[in-house]
Image (tube, rainbow, N blue to C red; front, top):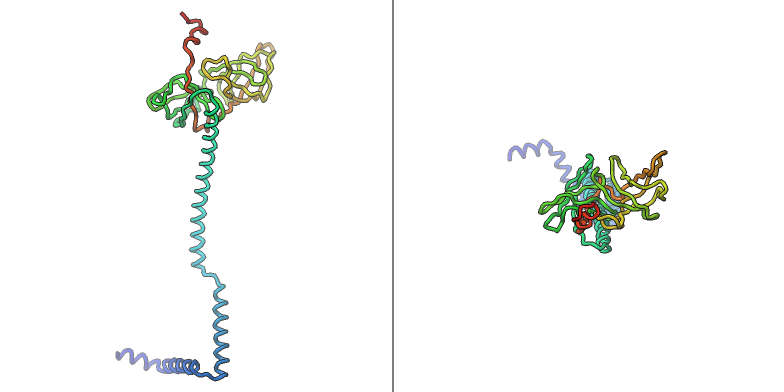
Length: 275
C-alpha cells in the first residue's frame, strides 16, 4: 500500500490531469448547451471518420490465415479433380468394354492386369482371373480396342497371357478392306508383321487388320491394328507389311478373356494328326 502511495505521489501531476480530464468529459456529456452539442457532434464524426479510415487497412495476420486456408482448399480441390478425371477415364474404358461385351457372341470374363513384362522377346501379362472364373489356356484376351493376346497358363485365381508382341505368337489375319489373308507375327520392335502376303495382293497403308474366319485360335473380326508400312523387295515373293497394334500394350489395365478355346479336333485335322 505504501508503495502504491509513493507511485501516486511521484506522478501526482499526471494523476491530477487524468482525473480532471475525466471530470471534464463527464461534465461535457451532461451539459446540454448548444455549443457543447456542436463540439460533441464534431467529435463523434471525427471518431467515426478515423474508424472508417482504419478499417480499410488490411490485417496482415488475417490475410495470411486466409491465404493459408485458400492454399489448402486449392490442394484439396486439385486432388479431387484428379481423382474425378481418373474415375471418368476408367468409366469410359469400362463402358467401352461393356459395349464390346453386349455385342460379342462369346461370354467374356472381366480381368485386371496385375503384372506385365514388355522388355523381352516373350512378353506376357498376369491377370486376376483364373480357373475359378472358368478361364482356361488358349482363351483369347481382348480389350475395348481389339486383340491383346491369349492365355497360356492358369491357376485358381490368376492367369498368364501371351501378348501379341511375343515371338511365339501367331494368328490368322485379314485386311478388312480387301479381304487379303496373312499370318500375324512379331519379330521384335514396335510393330507386328503380316506375313505370307503375295506382291500381287492389295494391301495399303491405313488398312485395318483383323482376325480372320480361318483362325482356330481367335474369334473372327477382332481388330488387330493398322497397316503403317508396305514394302516390296526386289526378287522377293511377298510384301513386307508392318502393323501398328490397336491396343497400347504398355498402358492397358483392363481386359476381357473370351471363354472360347480352339477346337482340338479341327487342330488335329488341319495339322494332319487326326486318327
